[in-house]
Length: 288
Image (cartoon, rainbow, N blue to C red; front, side, top):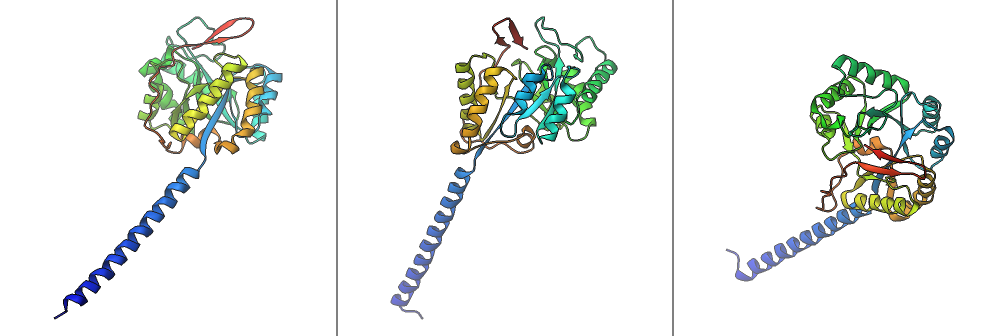
């Protein structure tokens, strides 16, 4: 039979062992948390409306980092610029024209509500063939079409027939069902988080870029959409090289689509974007 002193020594040894184990566990957890916090957050930037202007398009291709470029079909320079983007190892998307609530002209290749399914599918496939090296699709305008489940279902089913395409909902209306239908159709997809240049003034673009970084820090990643405007390209060329110092990494859009975003804070952006007005010195556009 063990004496009380022997039992006490045994209990002390077990207690010390448990204490060391607990300390080791806490140390390991602290290292894991520190390692997780040191991982850079990720952003993706899509430059829409590529292909219409050669000079602006070439300047956009000179932006540093893994920019993604979305090309309108049948524009004068879409093929040339898309090929150049591909040669630079940049990601190419089809900027798919869709009917808007307003009176903005879609241009060639527009998808509209009055099309039957065969017409709709054929126009989509023609658009896809008009831009080389496409890896994903996002909507150009579409504040009317993206709110209609039937047409979005047609689109997602057709996208699924293609190998490896993803979809980005530009969210030109808070009534959009495009992302929902993409998810239901098991299409890899995400939504735009920030429009960088709905107001194309330098101060507004800078503010929106900082908002993109804020959302990325909150949620682990974020997607911004801009256009090949002079001030947008100037500001991006200045801001992108500073990302590393902020522990933020610019990645192709597909990299965000094919991974699960990390939620850093429980905050949610519940503000609907609504139709956005693009102001230029010469005219006003609605990005619908």
